[in-house]
Image (cartoon, rainbow, N blue to C red; front, side):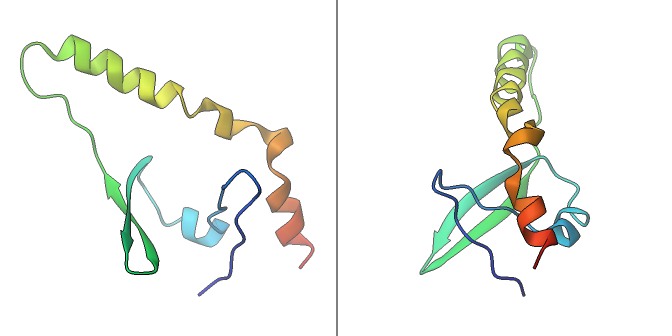
Length: 82
């Protein structure tokens, strides 16, 4: 069990040893009482008119590109010094 902090932006860093065990890019988030639960999801395009959905899926993935900003990743250095 690990203790993590919520950043002023509402971000939570998942510790590296947990991230290395995860093989999903997308998750559903749910409140169960006072707990936040992340559940992996795999989005699949079904049907013949999948182009609109496929483009929507790519758009949703693109919207998370800002998470890949190394300059904004202050928590790795913070946790490295603990």
